[in-house]
Amino acid sequence: MRDKRVTRRTAAFGSAGVLVTATLIAGAVAPTASASADTRGGQDREARGAAVAAAKAAKAGIKWQDCPADWGLEKPIQCGYVTVPLDYAKPNGKQIKIAVDRIGNTGTEKERQGALVYNPGGPGGSGMRFPRRVTTKAPLWTKTAKAYDFVGFDPRGVGHSAPISCVDPQEFVKAPKMDPVPDSEADKRAQRKLAREYAEGCYERSGEMLPHMTTPNTARDLDVIRAALGEKKLNYLGVSYGTYLGAVYGTLFPGHVRRMIVDSVVNPSRDKIWYEANLDQDIAFEGRWKDWENWVAANDATFHLGDTRAEVQAKWLELRATAKKSPIGGVVGPAELLAFFQGAPYYDSSWVPVATVFGKYFAGDTQALVDAAAPDMSDTAGNISSENGNAVYTAVECTDAKWPTSWQKWDRDNTRLHQKYPFLTWSNAWMNLPCATWPVKQQTPVNVKTGKGLPGVLIVQSERDAATPYPGGVELHKRFKGSRLITEKDAGSHGVTNLVNPCINERVDSYLLTGKLDRADVTCAPHATPKP
Image (tube, rainbow, N blue to C red; front, side, top):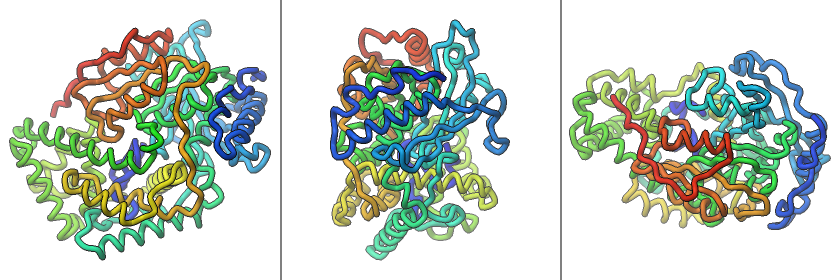
């Protein structure tokens, strides 16, 4: 995902304070019984449209070739495109191209079990780097790579797949932005204006795409990709928002799933998608932020920021106040600080780098902080990617579901939450506020449930995940009958399957290689705590 320095949260729900901041295969073509069972409006037509598109894709296959040089994907990774309808209710209408890439399985033909398709989250994340787990010989994935082709894709609207945009990318990353925490009603009015203008910018720049930027449509695209790959059934690994994409796919196409792992789970309840999910996130971030501060305090000999959490928090508040009074290096204000520091509650891999920069600042090295937290205006490709990721995040979440239109509700809910959970609350509010004035029709989320033919799904979740709080994994486990939940206890890093924890890694391998799940849910001890 994207560099956290550019005002964008990377995996689950987007960035804080941003705004302101083959042969024809029978199984590939027939819609499953429940593809149209839970119909609402045009979902019958869309289910038929998806079957039409999948049949075409199965016939056409994918023209694989070396990836373009500027995509950063080395040989023997190959790239290609899959054609999908913009609107599945009109399968013969306007088409868009979805970029895909793959690397073949490293084992024998006899060992091969098909393709494993990956989505890293977002919405707005690209999965195109997934095959690099093979070229870089990522140790956790060597057994799986023997059995599967690793396949990544840019979802609709992302990267090389009919990318959307809401604002000029250089403007999007420009710093410093307003402090997300408002001091006055005037500050709130200014943020509301920015959110409204952002929504309008999405419509002006990408209006044709917006009504079709939904999770169900991306799930339909996923089924067309499956068909184009020549796969009768899908093997899927989804992380963060990728779990919700998997949950929706499993609901719409239950008979098309072979194996599915979902890691760090978005709560799929209709009541949570998406407004309430973001409020839940604010609470969980505060808890994980405190976990990190405790760790920093325990390692005071390295970082010199205080040997209690209270002392570390005082240093954070001091830094924040300094940046608010006068942006550090002229560019790092509270919004930029937050965009950098939120890496710590997100991922354990950020604990040491963030604490190191934090400690250096108080030791007199301000440049390290500027280098880490300020946007790089010369990185135009990176800035385009960052803006695009945020545009897709906004478009999918705003179009997927109905959002409150009453400012009073937003104000009341976020004011209340901020009192106890100040780390992320207001920045998350402003990031999502374009959804209150969204210019296209907002839809009703899919009722995620078990359909005929759905196999056992493996759910992996850490107990103290900030971006996708633990109850989300429990909720999906209830809805997907026969699923198994692995809980990583006393841990909170986001994206568990790519961390070294044999209790989890061995079960992931076993499931992908044999399809076997444990007889009951499993609780694993945490992975190793980072060492400074």
